[in-house]
Image (tube, rainbow, N blue to C red):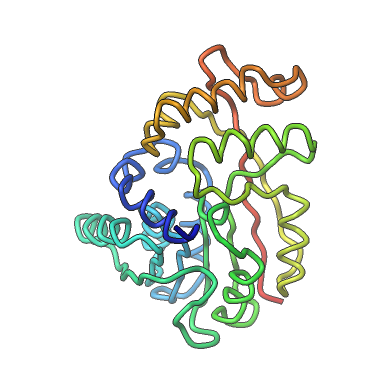
Length: 252
């Protein structure tokens, strides 16, 4: 099975879990996305790429944007459509991979992607598409889990992530994001970082990780070298802290 199909299947099956996940449903970054939409004209077209259960889309719509929420998993899009109707928000949905967007050049006044890009098969291609569909000088907000710059800590994180979810591609380092964004034609981003708690039982249950793989992921974390355990603040049950970042930039 190809990675994209694997990701669509796994996230489709877990769609409802992501709607109610505290990690995904809350955060100061959502407030910033709402504020970003408020700085644009009311009803400006906005894109939420890799929308998942739609929390970025809801924030943008609360700010007055007319949002198109895109994902590869139809079950996720069904969750977003139902929740948008329940909340009375102006959101439409579209099934599409991040690397091939079915929109004309300059179609959107702003765009966001949140906790999605680590599953994209080709981030540079997706960023090129984002630049294409954004209007000149339009803002882009990228929110995702990021890997530490330390090669050791990076390796530990990727190993635990792919054991939890075999469709995982990569949590990129902030330095990698800077290179990819500027390489795709975006201005150098303003970057904010914070820590996200991953309670191990909930973290694996959200993706329905089989017990054998969950045990292996836990062992990667609790048996990691001291430097990595210290960075991630690993607890005895495998719970740990992940690094997250919000990169705010504009189409150059």
